Picture (cartoon, rainbow, N blue to C red):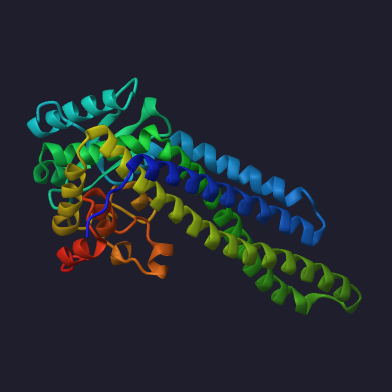
Length: 335
């Protein structure tokens, strides 16, 4: 069965879906603060505290996020005396010009020949970075490398990294508040149990009421924090998957060669090992899951909720205008 795909229409659909998802995510985060305030009649105290924590978390992520990511994966600057890395620079320069970027991104390299992968980071075009593994340089030809670089430049031009940074920072603020509330709750329960034996009968009732109010507040913050961080995590993953499809489409637009990227994805799924320096906090940045988690290659409802990337078979089927079943059959030994 053959079919055609309008990449421009796919891009427009993904933009609309992403806007809706982000708006829902922001509404959920604001609701978290408002619910606590309304339950305990302290509006807008907790909402302001939560937004202050979110602001600090966002500022830290925006100012230092790029350096933190590069250091965590042990990346180094590309060398000018290496032929493969010089060719990479040429590809980045050419596609940056095609993408309308005023300045090409910096290039970093991860020394791992067993891994074929790449990612982009940086909150804006002027300080952006494209990072690839040495395995990518050794395993991919020029067309395949161009497809991967086109994908990563698309993330930069489309401001996907800024978007994901902001969402991650908001989610991180919820997790911080939840963690603080949970620890305070445990500490209060332990302290209350110890001090209960030393209270007089006169002060017992008043102290018990105050203790119960504090416990109820902390339990509500911790419980609602867990719920909203769960929902927020699902939203973050949904945005991440959507942006991957969008970046694939824009890469095709830049290179005019969908087969370059599809062949690169095939090599990634069949020949790439797990990247040891990657972690769950940085996995969504890569063109393909660097942790090689099988859930990212499944198409079930559960997998679609928890995967950081859309299934590679699905991405290849779109790029090659072939049915998903054909691609899954060809990659059945690897997915």
